[in-house]
Image (cartoon, rainbow over all chains, first blue to last red; front, top):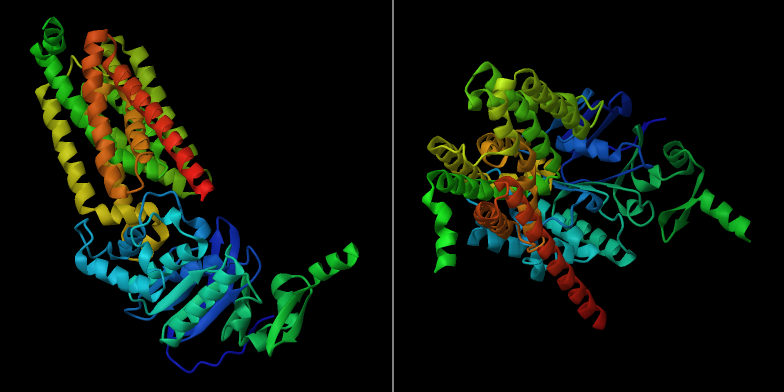
Length: 263
Length: 283
């Protein structure tokens, strides 16, 4: 099943047309079609192995596309925030060095300039971690680490922010902080695309969701997309959707069954 | 006075002075490039390439072709073969290195067995030879060291970015494949010009141990790029002197000294970390 509910009102920044990707001979994505318009805040949800990270990597150009095409608007600057699990936290590098890395293409001289230091301070202040510039990345809390990589993505003044699982492995408070931070950035006019496993804590709060399982199962507003039918087609397991505080609340039937057996 | 004279005795020999200069520069160069080798998890590539180049060196000696030309071409071909086999993803890069370089090394050994007259030159490549160092070797090592320094200074940001986060570097328009090719070429050149002094079998250690020791002393990438070459240069300088007085192989003495420094730094770093953890526990 594939539905396209989202209405297009603006010129797209990214257009994915019939995109297929493979690892060896194994298909990871098949005939994916969707686009992202300027100013949107889009979440991609799906089970592990559904191709969320592959799609993100194909969009940023780090994963070859086997079939189809991804069209990126000209002069588009993408700020990418990888999964924190993929970062080598023991790498000998300070927060400041991480952030200025995105200038590697244009700056030849190794030393960080005073202008760059000022810009680093500004972006860190904006993200609420002004005092960590000279600390080693391993000395930070989970939330601070996530913000540092967000700061690095922001440093290149991107047109679109692409985040892979930004709330993976963080506590509830940090998740709230990240969600509010992203909402503020979106409010300032930034286009945001992210992947998440977190249906209730993050996905349900976004204006637009894309359900992915190798291909796009559904695309639209959370109220329209987060339905039992779509979620079962996406996750391959029965899931109930309730309403709580005017928002969809996904209940995993497996968990309910486990609790029932426990009793 | 007698002790002082003894210490300076080897400096009376031209071969020792040449060997000392080459070994010290080589130590600094390997220490510098070794930072990228250990941070990129490429230790096995240094090991593999030095073995692969041995095949080229042996072939050059047998067919009487210039050593640098023969071993250099051989090293480049081995590197390309490794990249080609690894890119197909049927086997991992480590397995590709294992297959290509051990085959090349075995070919070198076979040539050594078959053509005995070339064995002296081949053994010099295998174990290193301070006696064989010529002024041309000093120029070659110094030139590659300057080139390496220029590459690291001018490519610092690109090297750091692509080492720390390959995918994002690529997204940020850094030509990661070019950066990696330049780094691999520098490592190959380093192996080529230092092999005759410290030997194929031990060169990979010099590309790993000083950088590994330095890594335990600092959390700053820029400081690491200073500390590692200093450790490499000092251990090579002291190791060469020790080898003369102890009448041991120069390469073996240098590497043993590097290993000793590693053990000492490891012990100190471990004690410091435990003290830090204990102080955190008291808070």
